[in-house]
Length: 197
Image (cartoon, rainbow, N blue to C red; front, side, top):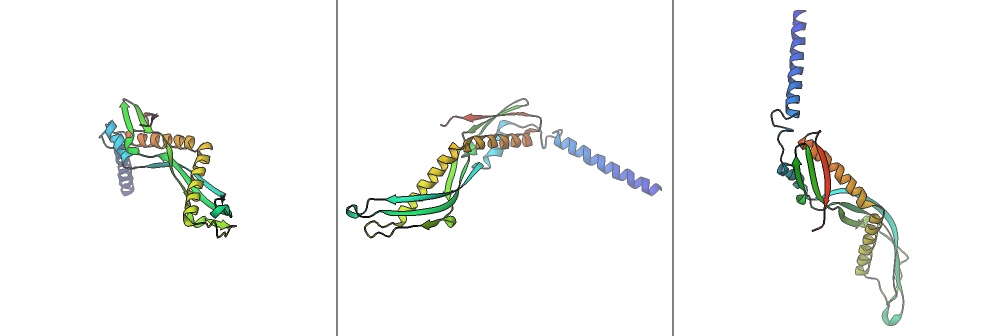
């Protein structure tokens, strides 16, 4: 019976020691996890990531190419393309983030979100109804230029559909969580947006 009591006392002592150790570490009493944090500490935590993608817009579309500038005005070159792609938006350069700390208040100034990339997946491209006109032949450059224009069009469509607003909200959420993970869960975090320089 005494052995069981001694084992229980030992287990309780270990649990209490672990709890105290966690509390001391978590609440910064030893200056570890949430100890004294300055602006450069916060900024450095963001600088490790060069670019932050916070929102994606996936698209599938059909595009029609048409060129009527054939040799001596003869013939029209056309084709249809079905493709899939994605538009990514977020913060292009996290090294430009600025953090200011005033007591329990942290203000993080972030570059404006932008479209980071708009691409068409080459493996999804399917071509239909391609014309074969000896006076106006379709070359690889025509297809490449057409697909670049289609990717740009998809980016504009994504922006019109609120892509940047969603990317902004997601960026605020991610940065707020990052600041609280470093400075402590009880800090007040404000995210502001820097004007383009």
